[in-house]
Image 1 (cartoon, chains in turn brown, green):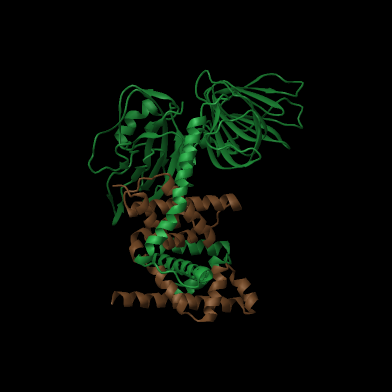
Image 2: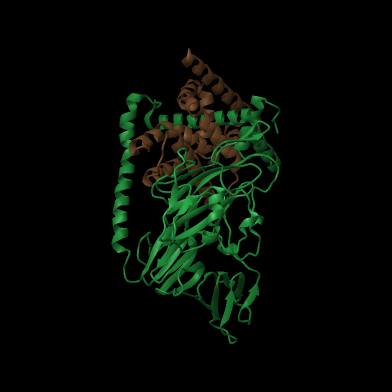
Amino acid sequence: MALTTESIAEVFLSHRLGLTAYLSMVTQNHHLAEDVFQETCVKALGKKESFESTQHLLNWFRVAARNRAIDLIRSRDGKYQGLSAKVLELFEQDLADHQEERKHLIRLLMDCVSESTPRNRELIRLKYFEGWSGEQISQKLNRKIDSIYQAMSRLHKALHLCVSEKQKKAVL
Amino acid sequence: MNISGNNHDAFILDYLRWKDAAMSQEEGSEFEAQLSSDPQKRQWFLDLQYQETAITEYFRNNAIGGKTVKFDATERKPRLAKWLWPIAALFVVSLVGMWIKNDVKDLPTGITLEHADTAIWEGKKIREGDPVELREYRLAAGSVRFRTDKGATISIGGPAHFRYESPTQLILETGRAMAKMHQKYSEFTILTKDLKVTDLGTVFGVSVDPSEGTLLSVFEGKVEAKPSKSEKSGVHLITEGNSMIRDLDSDKALLDIPYNTTEFEDLWPLTMGIDDASNQVRFVLPGANENLSTFRSDDNLFLLPEKRGQFITEKLSADLNEEHPVFPNNKNPNIFISANQKVDSYMLYFNPVSDEAGIRKISGEIEFAMPVIGVIAINSKIKGSDNLLGDPTINYAEFNNRGLESQDLDVGEGKTLARDELILSPDRTRLYFRMQVGVLHDYIRIVTESSY
């Protein structure tokens, strides 16, 4: 039986952050990823696609949104220089295989971000929320670019460990 | 470049440089190749991508509410209701749009805007379903398709400046236009500053660049072309597979040039009834005098229009239709395309370049202007429909084992070729595909209602 409009909306709601994470991979721009996410949601609902399962809906969504994102970038920049379709398809398959495992990952990660030091939070705010490059951050903070990358790398590693710990605790 | 085996720290550093576009082209290619071949690195990459999203979400929530949004079940209901409001509004707008569309489709000019693809208008706008007035229009970007009640389809690519003089005559000041006549008695003329092109049952394209003149390419059939401001003017008969240019600086009436299809590549699918398609779908333009088997790619599949307006007198055996919209169908029902109707046919095929053993995957969707009434996906059934629906200029015998795999196949060396999948949307205009190819190729025939 096909998913109802409300159940489609609920799937999008519960998978919003995971799908946006995937689209950020395509666009390398979180704000554009969000635009494409919204547009594709409306397309799915407005065109009354027959989605027989959540899996079917999510598979369709990733392909449709990926293509839309690439089209938008091509029309804006004249070309798309992100990951190739072949690699993106591998990621789509990986996500399809592990989507339940990853469903609650972002909530855990947000808790980890809130637990990081103010100085580290400022660094990742500039990098990902403000969209600054490593070079721009190095100029603002008057630090060498290599030290910015090293600090960012440590932060990512710390977030990785933090979320692993939280997952372990959740299992226990 | 830092990548060294399975070193997580080095991978993160590479990721950061990749994000900043700070890698050389070679480093970028190497980074992508490693993602392609190493599941562990894809896992790390996904982890980093999720971290980015969590970080952005955290700071956004702080900025707007001062606290982190939790996704507890207790909070879900009001969020869902709030989220559905714009969708409900969209449905209302769609319903109003459909009402308007139905109300105005038969107005006197006999020309309507059938489809618009990211169209941006300057000045007077036209929406899908609107009648066209006999006035000037400026299409700043995107492309549009018009339909005339005289049996013509006209596609225009922006930027373009044009006006309809009558239901059978278009004046193209600048931009690109493609015209297709669907019936023998169809008629249409495109006038440019220096050329008048009249169809003689055909598909042709005209491109006007004020600094270079007018380019004319004929894709099917033939046209009459008459330079409007030349002392040597006379009527030229131009046949399919040929291009000419009316050069503003030349005193010659018309110059022969090599057959030019690139100028019209985006208009061709639109004119032939394809409203939208994934990037992986490429279109085979006619008249190139190339063998079809030369159109091969590891990353793209090709769509070729076949017979148009073909009347079928007997039901055809198929593998997917409105009643059975998913392929493969485990229940193995008898699926048919009904007799006594006019149809258009398309060939979609995935034919990788490399003959080496290996599995290649491709997925995407195609949106057709007319509803799909059936898809023929099994080799024997495709063969059986070649004469009726195939392009008579193509030697289909060179393609063996054309159909899709309806079940997983063991291809040796521990590899499995997964079954191919097709899904037709409920409104029957969109076909979703996921294909996998080993050493052969995948090939399907898509049958839609006829556009005229």
